[in-house]
Length: 258
Ligand SMILES: [Zn+2]
Ligand SMILES: [Zn+2]
Ligand SMILES: [Zn+2]
Ligand SMILES: [Zn+2]
Ligand SMILES: [Zn+2]
Image 1 (cartoon, rainbow, N blue to C red):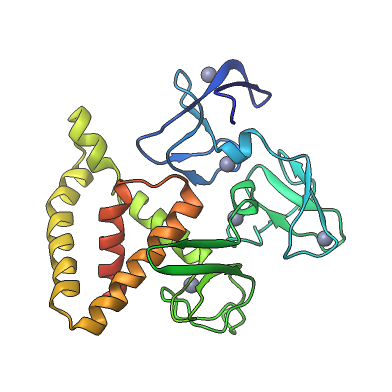
Image 2 (image 1 turned 90 degrees about the vertical axis):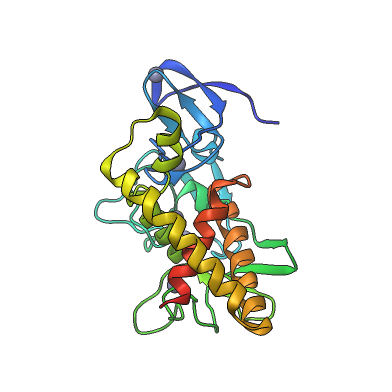
């Protein structure tokens, strides 16, 4: 059971409350995007992932044999550090092992589940993949360089780098994708949000058409891709979120036309 109110050293002014966030936020701990329930101070617009607010002081991860990871508010090592899970730059809270060639994990990545199951598909988190990632069309051990972990279906057909799913989510966020829901509420419609309100529905209907018009086999394929994306997004960003439903359709559209 999570405590609903905490005092956190990184925000000494006010208590942080465990609350839902209706739009994505940047975690003030690890500086990565988050969504849904987190520890926040609404007065200061301060947010922490659950994993960043209450980290483990130390732990072992099954992918790094013999590495004891310790939590740091910033990397004790100088220079650019990269999260070995999602391959994004470490810019804040991090777990790091003490070896000379140290590994880094952002707190939310450290907690990514080993397996995800639902909607007739089972996914496993892997360090190396034999299948191609459906977003970037590469394998993590290709000459493009490693990309961190991937979720792969048990049949091997459906595979995404965690890095690639995060990237798709960041792109949608930067395009103001989530602003349209907010702008409906506060009527503070920026030009971008207005533009998206016009473009997104047509994008959605045309991608639904892709799924509907395609034959049974292709339809099954895209439905599976949607299920896989949904499971991975839930694993990265938290609780099932209705906002993902339309986002996933838009992502499918971009994958289908690539
Ligand atoms: Zn965080
Ligand atoms: Zn505050
Ligand atoms: Zn190590
Ligand atoms: Zn990461
Ligand atoms: Zn990829």
